Image (cartoon, rainbow, N blue to C red; front, side, top):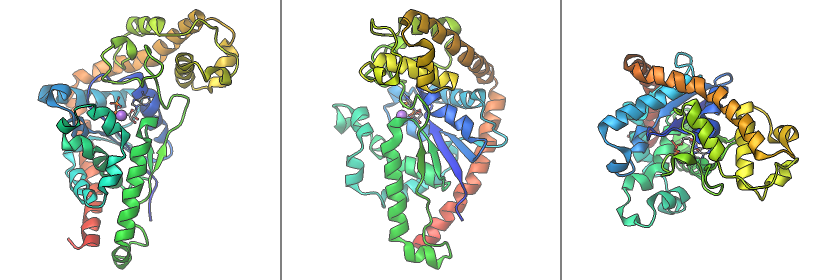
Length: 344
Ligand code: ADP
Ligand code: NA
């Protein structure tokens, strides 16, 4: 029987931002109430970019602890659920090799994130960057997870995960049945992409995704920003000269306005329509000062707790060690079954 299980990951690449929080981490926290959850600091994904970008060993250690601290500070309970870092459970890489032999070259060639991240100098991208979505499929399926909370940008990778699971189930259906494992071994995991901020945009340009790698500091609110930084960035955020619309339809041609209203709605835990019923017809200056207060109220406690935890290496490292011990047990069971199914 397949149990309902949640898996998701965040890369330890520094500059954790409001998009990561509202698009993913907020849903990680919610799903704890209804599911068994496994949340991973995906260090094997972080090293797919050049070492000059991911920063080397000291930086990786620091960023791994920072993401762990963010998970805990945001409200994930490492006692009830699992928080760990990917490289400590070797089965992720082992299953990824099997999936490399299941996935088709044509499927990988369609991945738009690789094209964006590799840029013009594609010949110089790492093989790991190209293969990233296969490792991601392995991250999810090594726990036979059924639900994956992610931002909108990960939708295509989730589709690839489902394609890999389905092809494995089909290719080995007779053996899966012969092992007494039913008619499918891997679930086809569902993306959980919900809330008013599944794609948070840059505060400087409403057509670009808020991102860790944007060179402009004013483009994103980092989870470690203090109240002054949050206030400055929101006040400087790009808007248009019109007042806020009274209905959601009025946001459609206005990406910057739509983004700020979406951020407000997500932070307040309200639908966008309700935010517009409060602020529609008013000027952005008034709306922005309310947004500053709300953002500071919601984010400052997380920043404070992250700061405290980031200094407590002993505690953070013990969370990761215990989490990886518990994750490894589940992953090893899957790998044993996969080897039995394939005759290895
Ligand atoms: P990034 O995309 O910032 O490099 P990750 O790849 O580690 O960060 O993403 C961690 C999670 O945050 C993923 O679920 C991703 O979909 C989500 N995410 C990243 N950027 C945004 C954004 N601008 N809006 C909403 N969700 C986002
Ligand atoms: Na991403």
